[in-house]
Length: 274
Image (cartoon, rainbow, N blue to C red; front, side, top):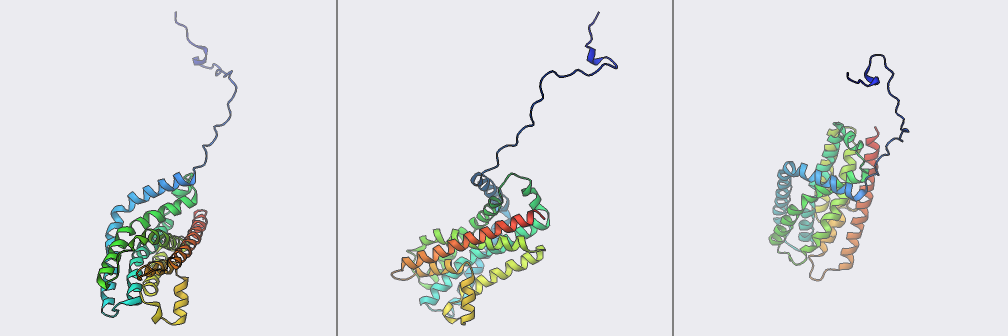
């Protein structure tokens, strides 16, 4: 004779669990900013590595071509310094402003923001991680452009180390602006147009010597985030650079970068809840 448990017989009442009910599982702690930023940065860097490298070559060749054209007009002096510094920062503008505006515009249109909204990642980590990844691609192109420009115009190479500060500060300011434009644009096509217009402004207002511009254009130039990075880099080409002014320009560029990244974070929050 076999013994069958009563709970498996037809019509038998289900067994009642005598153990007390446990509380619902608690959610895990919210992800911290720095680990989340590093994770987004690595993901964006590996994703964009293949697609963005050809565009980086385009940005570098574009800046080098502009300097070659300007060589027939500018001989040296302050104008040559402005051309080399502006062309070098233009590589940063092409990637950090133009391409990032296109990326966030497409991300918003395709519903990609919904994916990030479901992750326990702070909005600032998404913006800073993507901006940092795109700005990282500008380092080799900016260095190559600066070295080529110094050789072309006969400028000293001794203070090129200042690019260590110019690239991240100008990149942060331009990347924040590009991300904000892409997130606030209602259509991805408009985000592309705004990114192109921003890069054109960096080209015209950053490369051309300020002394030859009208007063109204100079005022618009002062409003461009990359202007202070250009000014800081151009000052280092002098025989005895005034480092107080260089640090001042870099400080202004850093403040503008913080403001533009904060605006991009706000734009991300606004786009993610819609």
